[in-house]
Length: 382
Image (tube, rainbow, N blue to C red; front, top):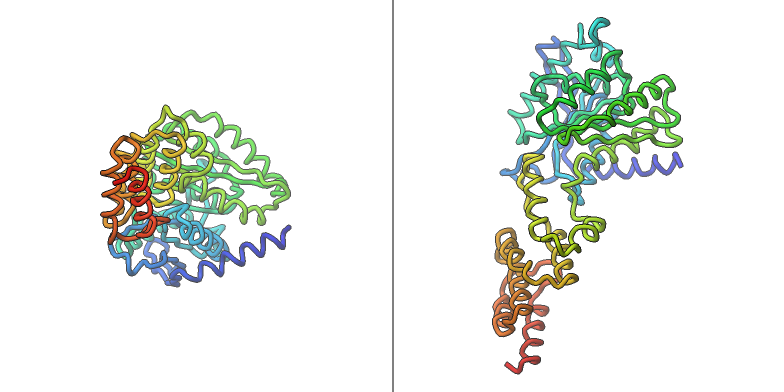
């Protein structure tokens, strides 16, 4: 089984090779030294000049960057998550100093305080200046660095919205600090934590206790996800946790699932088109990303309308299709179906015919649209 996961990670790492990887040396005034940074830019970053991208900061970048970057590239390719800029901070040999905290209050101290300012005040500022970043940020860490990433959550206005904790080595007061911060937050936060059955015993004990605290949080602005992987060690759990964490933070971004189709779109008391509009409004509100409605989601609503025979829903759907995919056959097809099923077959026939010359999309092409027009003509003798 471990060989299987190793193979999967190898595939993901090779997959990420299609994205742009940069290696930079960052001179930090806060640290009074240079740091090695790895940056993965999304595919076609240079071509999509009007597009902005969320940022993922990966601590322990010397070994965590590649699996995170590979998984982000893989999920983004299938449009399950947005394309993102992934930034790894190498800490080989100095991670203990970088994550130092005080004994009295468990907050960053010494080199840890300087590293805290380096990330929050220097690195992110330069990324925002140099690249087209969106105002949605995730930070990832493992054991010591996992504990460290949560210091940003304790600030009044946290600069990160998502926190991925891989087997955190929690400071004495950190569990209480985080629980309070999540209970009282007034802005949307995503918090992920993972351990494994074969994790380091002392860490696992504290993590399970912390999980029990977090489960009591009653704040609709907090999305919390916890994984306890069977037969996984402190290091092997990382391979499972990264995709689980990323998926949990972008659940609403993903295309409409079979579950959503069956449990939401097929319910006649719910407008499938309104559900679609609200889904994409939520994506913009949560992630600061204005996204074009995917063909997959349009077709899911189309199938639901056909299944429930709720023909009136086509009226709003075809208007939405004209907005998102002008000059294609999608809008005309939905409009023709609306007219066809609401008593205007002649008008539907003309719309099908007039789609000639529009761009093909999904299963819709000239032959299909003309065949639909011919079928109406034959049925009604026009």
